Length: 530
Image (tube, rainbow, N blue to C red; front, side, top):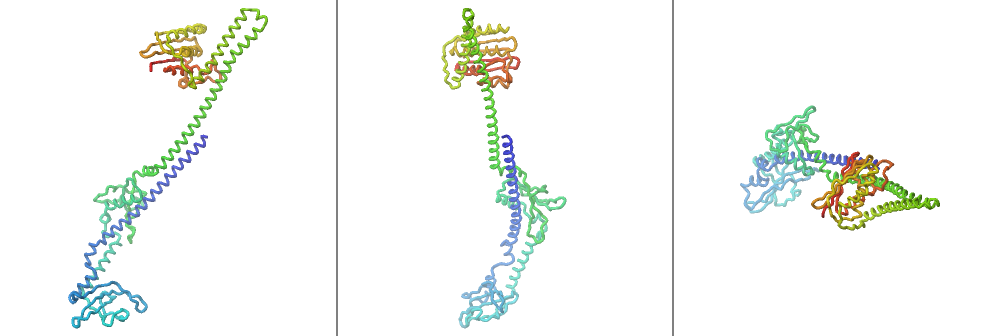
């Protein structure tokens, strides 16, 4: 069973490690995506700045319509109109040719007739008459098709636009238009863009970044004069997370963006917190189940041993008086013994004593069963506790003297208390009996009965064999006997102290034990008013 649990725990730990690796791998993939997107975003931001409307308007002001109208404003009347409609593609000799079409409605001042005019050209530097059939252009018979001579200002405007666009393209495709990465790159913008992309990929942890020039030996850091970035770390020169800045430059950039995460380990564990908590809970459940199973098996084994000891002891204890009674009966049947009145009387006395002993043993077992079921009812009555104590002590004097010992009442305050006389006497009897039985030398017992302000204490101190510390916490358990191997020199059921404990509890009292192996034991009963 333990091997199976150990294997299950190994599988669980392996699964946790696998989840950790997958979580870290996903984190690295998200970081790489964020860095690549940041590099593209920085290029887009730079392009938008170069293509801003303000910069474009500096070289070309107004639309083509405005330019044409301005050029022909001297001879266009208020009722007339002229505009540029855009590029026009016409098939000529089987090929598609693109033209710029300028058209308008003019009024002949001599005749007052209105005419439509169109100008097509494919050469910005010179506009000539369109050598195209009117039918192809869709002109009416009264419509004229001719070339209009444009002055140089319109051509200059077009040329300015072309030059400006060419300059913009050159700037965008140059490796470093401004010649210095520190002037080209804004750290604050990079910081905010990087943080935004991290959040887009659900990366919410502390980070540091720097700009370096990668080298085969040692990376070269780039220092910025103005540091408005809270996450910039100029001392960062090595990291597993990096990406090339301005990747679309025609000549590859030598500058790289490096990012590090100081709390990477903690962040990964936090990301898998739910999985980790479930796994730990499962491990705890498995460990608890294993502990509970082993503990139950161990307790069952102990109960089995206690049960076997109880049956063995009970059989021996019951067999002894039964055998004595049987032998006495057989002796009385003998005719020679029957005529000896004194011998018969002694045998009858022996039978009576063994019968009482047998009854006491059975009564102890029955009383224990009643206590366990909670059916034992106390018959409380006012008793003089000191007199009960003296009676029990007097009954033990002969037994102590037979072993060369003594039992002494050191103090016996006069106390009257409501107790069950029979059961309370049995409690004192059991304590004194144990002090006598579990002593390997001349027994010496001291008894103290002391009155308290709201109750009394009864203390029995002996010089017996004592009890080991690990056994003291179980000494009041039912059927428990201090282990002495397979041989018990003192016979018993293991019910005496369990009975004492239960009776004291029923009298609303407490019992405690102080003992040292080889030095004796002290049992103290304390009973107070509720």
